[in-house]
Amino acid sequence: MVAAAAAKLGTWDVYETAFLEAAPRLDDAVASLARQGIQSILVLPYFLTLGIHLQRDLPKLVQDLARKFGVAIQVAPPLDGHAALSRILAERAEEFLA
Image (tube, rainbow, N blue to C red; front, side):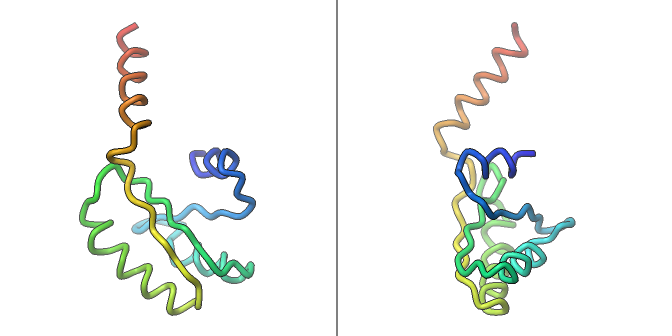
């Protein structure tokens, strides 16, 4: 699982996997973290580009959830533009073409 591997690399003891339109949902993840006493949450979107979900849906949802659960929520940018993404694509192409 990508979230578990990222948490291990990032040395995060507490994390939740969540989706906007499927279970487990972001509101359930925030509720779970709030119940554990977490006061500051970082959402790491697993999106390639800044599409409609990140531009319109996620900011409103995050604002509502932060207010509802009394936590601070930040949202990291999408993966697009990160140097590692180009390396990953090149690696995949080389693996396929080998």
